[in-house]
Image 1 (cartoon, rainbow, N blue to C red):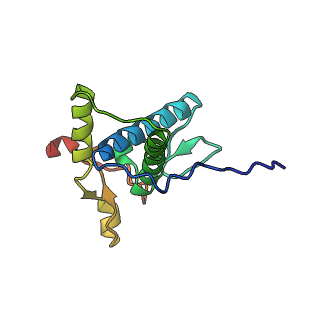
Image 2: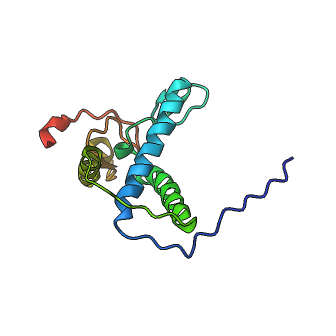
Length: 151
């Protein structure tokens, strides 16, 4: 048995400005993509429920399609990383508007459009969907939505 006792640095007194929320979202999305790429390399694929034997997970979707509970984990880690950087004495300065930044802002804006799973709705449940989602996070129902109609 390990005697490991984690002692993360106390970040409770570190304040971040609101403009770092976009950076937090970029870090969170990239962290998810890094995780997904590693899983794919290990043979993992999408499945409506996690199945370790079959190497399937419902999180094998783009970040924008993750349920908020999964995004929260990535966002928390990103925010803690930003706070640690500041506590270590570094400044985070945005020097220019890049194409990547513009695309990120569009993705953040688009992810606020909510749709509801028709299968869940038929059962009286309003499960939110995100643009381009293929499967419902709650019931696993394959969605037959032409997302091009919403562009």
